[in-house]
Amino acid sequence: MFTGIIEEMGQIERIEKKGNSAGITIKCNKVLEGTKVGDSIAVNGICLTVTNINKNSYETDVMPETMRRSSLENIKKGVPVNLERALKLEERIRRTLCFRTYRWNR
Image (tube, rainbow, N blue to C red; front, side):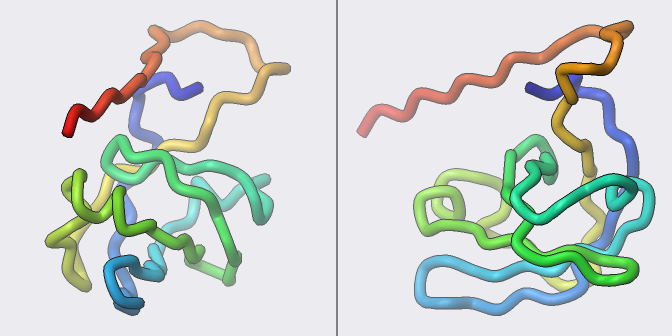
């Protein structure tokens, strides 16, 4: 679950195309605090799983369906992105919550 409130502006540091999918490295600082591999971070509102953490960046994989149906399809190195960590259940909720459910019809 996400609040919809952006915590930090990150920057696309690297994009490695893997067929229809991609591996992306995002330069950031604040959202790395307390983040572990396997956690979710929303990138421009798209929930992605952290696959590796570096000193000032993290890596994530974007699957073909997500690439095709989101704003990440045309993302380029150096582009700024909105970042938000998933809400932890033990935190107090003092903000508006955004529940995101996507349904794609073919």
